[in-house]
Length: 255
Image (cartoon, rainbow, N blue to C red; front, side, top):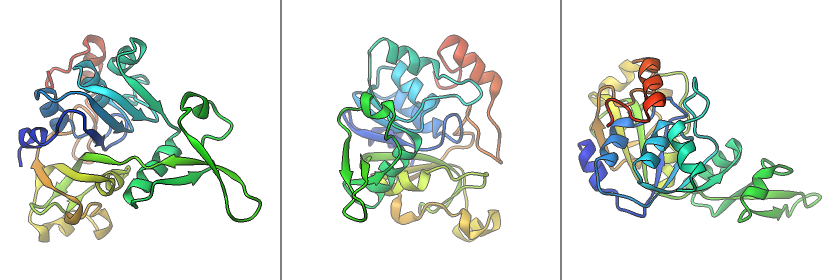
């Protein structure tokens, strides 16, 4: 597929999960295509970075569900911060572990998963819709019932993929891209390069084949498609370009 075809498959009002972490391996080519589309009123689920900030700045977002929105080497994503401070978006702020359990619950088609994360913190105060449950075992410990983070669409960026949708990461961290793919009704993968299926194991070990074709609706070949975020080992984060984005609020290549 093309990035524009992926953006065209997203409808206003949908919940969209975006893989990667902060300013690392974000599917920015797909995000850029959404920025150029007429879609709006999105709920964005993300370990957030410039993907969230740019979509907020463009008026595409109604609600963000995230544990943070950061540029890593620059702690606070400026466009998200402005949108949040101006009251332009709703925000559900979860602990990082809670967020992971929400993805796991959705991936396993469960309504929620219990965790101790969040107990005794302001996470419960700022998210009054969260509920607790008591364990039916042992001493009946009270736990947070993290709701499933179900999504209409997930967008992830990988180092390599074949045309069928088997996708591979080659960097040091898989992040949680496989959970996004499993948790969403449809997943679209962008990648640095599409290769023959047999060549995937020439690129890395079998454990690097993070995403199965059974999870994937479409594949987009997008060299440099994570920039300015990092996509190790193909390239690192473009710190100069990221800094200019922070200074101007506009990325020179995303528009």
